Amino acid sequence: MSRRRFFGPSDGDEYFFPEEQDWETEGSGIDDEAEKIMDQLHLSLGSIKAGNSSIKLKNQVLYLLDSLVELGAIDKKQKKKLLLIIYSNNEL
Image 1 (cartoon, rainbow, N blue to C red):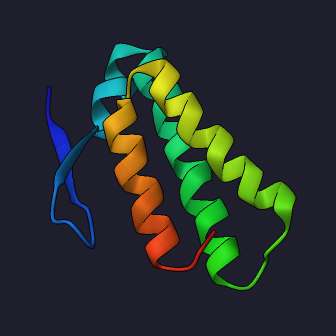
Image 2 (image 1 turned 180 degrees about the horizontal axis):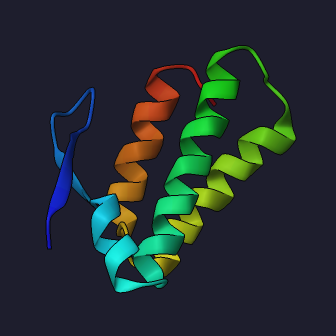
């Protein structure tokens, strides 16, 4: 399985996400769902960074991170690190 590498901006830790071609050729499944959640997470964080500071949007970010944990795309330790990165950038 090919994977896309992502380095955390503040701690330099590596995170791996499945490449789009893997889930496109294998059909729907957890990878497909995780990719959709990550796309939504990026959009939500972008909205917050652009100035939308609504509680509903911030809660959505937390819900999306919880969903990634439930799917097994990230573990609780990675979620905590991502939250620290988000908070350190004053996005939440």
